[in-house]
Image 1: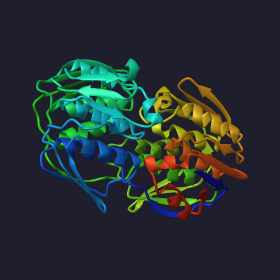
Image 2: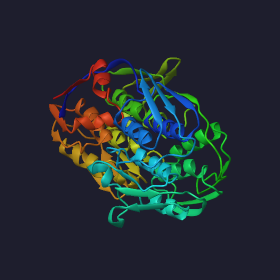
Image 3: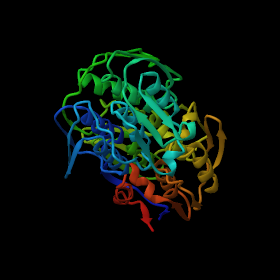
Image 4: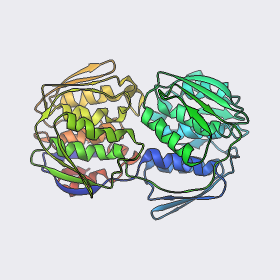
Length: 424
């Protein structure tokens, strides 16, 4: 399938779906907990569905209702799945559930689609092996399928933190290890997502210590997770698309409802980044109101918020002067190489854009319609669609089904604001 976009005007209001990062953490912790947990207003997407498949495979009883998921956990004793655990293209589910597998006798086989099997998980495997369990990758490449056996004992490990998910997985699962665990992290990146994990641990009463610079952690072993009720907050990562669309679409005014500034989500930084570029933003009781304005290019360090690179590359096309997105080489190891996919797509639309090893340089450009490859990457597809409603002519983007990973209602939400988008 493909999405077809035409130049549009935007106005109105919308409410973005729940956070993928939060719902996966909720599902995994509920699986490890004792008793019945309730996850309220969860995101229903390909990633959450993949995680549910995995949680069930490891022995959790997961009941899906309208606006509610109930999970009866395993008391920290997951079973070994009887068949391979297929996780689609959900990298976050693969990371967290590989840690869960280290508490089962095993062997547990975690695999997935083409995109997942191309992503590196060596730091996670190294950490699991250092801490007493066993994790092997396909032909020792660091890529899935991963074969994991128990049991996580604790001890010391040092891993690369270019991707935050292995760090978060080890933190969550180290609490159930037999003895204490110490984790050193080189090159810590995406630290707001680690903050999110630490907040979950604190809410659960887990005993740990964390360095302020996210370079080291100590987690007490032999702890337990307890059942909980959690309302899943709105996803700032998904909100970035409508907020940025309003900023660059002439004569637009959009209200995004339900966003929580107290949330441990790094992509809430989009508000400060857009303000830095001159966007008119008002925080009101109902949410965040954005009006279009003249933007000014600037340099933005995305080491903590790499998921914002695709949409900010689009914003850069409409900002005066030059926009530099830097310190985000880890954007190359997501669902696709996002530095390459956005450079390629925007260049086909007429953008003046330069690809760096760790980012992009974009100059103000007049965009035109084009036929583009979405690479089955939700953030690439949605970002190019926002470019398409601000370009002359017609823009077509392939693999639109990729948006189901995190934001299945994206097209309908944008259409409610007046965007001319159709899925063909």
